[in-house]
Length: 135
Image (cartoon, rainbow, N blue to C red; front, side, top):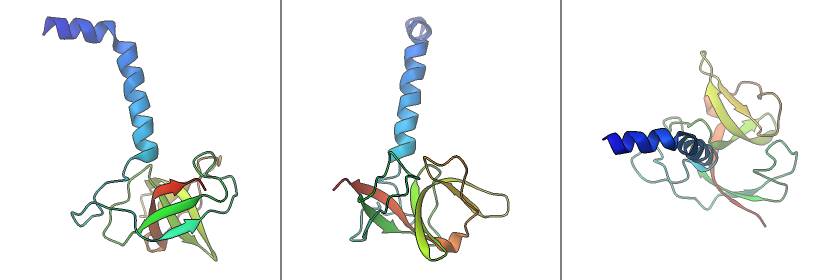
């Protein structure tokens, strides 16, 4: 045990850096093959959508990218860091889920936006982005 402790102490900065990078990768790409709430592995469906470019999700998404999505229903757990499609008035918005507020509203934010979006009702969530094609 003494050798392990010495190794960890000697390499603490490298270990912290590695863990930080790993957490960032998981935050961006995590959940691609996670459970869809029903015990089955979520796989991309036939549902795809082309993304218009507003710059709000740059550099993760750019105009003309094709999204692969899986539908989301009320019982599915939403995971912070995952990207979802939600109905926003007449348009659909593709932004990252940040947190759930105390009153049950969902807060999303474009990666390139300074401020989060207006709170969203759970019933407005359409799908989760599980893949991006850079056509």
